[in-house]
Structures are given as C-alpha cells and as structure tokens.
Length: 114
Length: 109
Image (cartoon, rainbow over all chains, first blue to last red; front, side, top):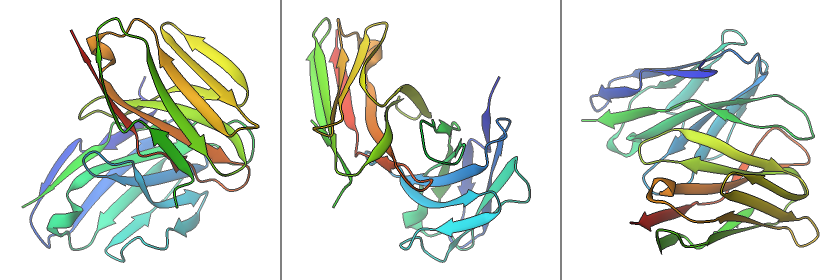
C-alpha cells in the first residue's frame, strides 16, 4: 500500500499560472518535506514541517509556499511559476527526533511550465 | 560546501562487474542512507545504517563512522541496476537530511 502519495503525478501549467501540488501520507509521521529535483541533480530541500511548525530554507524563493492543514496532508503552492521552476517535486516524510529514522518518499510530481 | 560528497558522479559498467560507490560526509550523524532512483521514478530507500555492514541480495553497504565514509557495493551487476544512487545522512540534531549529488550508474549488457 502506498504510504506517501503525491497528486498529480504530472502537472502542466502556464507561465505565471498558480499551481498546487498535493502530498498525503498514511504513516502518521510528524515531519513532512518538500524537495525540488532538477535533472541530474540531488533533491534540494525547499521547506519542511515539524508538526505545524514551518521551516523554510533560506534560499527557497518566495514564489514557493506550503500549507499543512493536518498531519496527513501537505501542499506545495507555486504562486507564479517560471520556466526555471520546471522540475520534479518530491514529498517525503519521517518521524522526528534523533536516532535512526528513514525518510519515505512519494513518487514525485513532474511539473512542466509552458 | 556540501555536507555529503559522492564519487564517482557517473559510472558505466559491463554486466557482471563488481561496482563500488563511495560517500563521505562531514557532520555527525545518527544514520546514513543509500537511496535508489530510477529514471523518472521516485526514490526508494535501500539501506539505513549507523555502523558496520548490511547486505540485501546483491547489494552491500558499509560504513566507517570514524572515517566518516560509506560505500555501496553491487555484486554481479545487471542492467536493471542502472539508476541514480544517492547517499544521504540524517545529522545528530534537527529534522533535515543532507543529500549527496548522486552517482548515475549505467550497466551495459
């Protein structure tokens, strides 16, 4: 059974047209992450939630916003997508705290900006 | 400066060859992870380890905590092993994970 689900798997949007990507999880993990991954590059952390606490990376553009209405769901909003925002967007979850913990990734949403 | 460095960046091997991918890191960690990503696919966790060695099928992962170094070995490589292999670490504090840039492996029949 899928544990981290992302919808849609493929999203096409127009330059400047807002888009929302969705992530849900059945693991009851209290940490959720959004990554941007461009071709042949490692995933780049955009932000993460620890419960309802939002943690933004310093170099994440203001164009990217996130919402986490409850434990299970997290959304990535791109307010005005540019051509440079075309990428794979990965959602991941983990439990919090120190010690051995695994990150579970969703299948990703591939965003195309026309 | 990257907290996690991987080598090589790209690797091409003949089917059946023994493959080694290396990872070094510069922070104190609670665990190191080896991840696999097929083209266009999501990321799958292969191993999580904090000491010693783990084996799963033809895959072996080792870690040397003192040297801050880990290796991923693939024995009897097969074309279906072609993927990007990513080393990541979970540091001692905080909720973040640090990723290496990945090693793109192509195994030729």
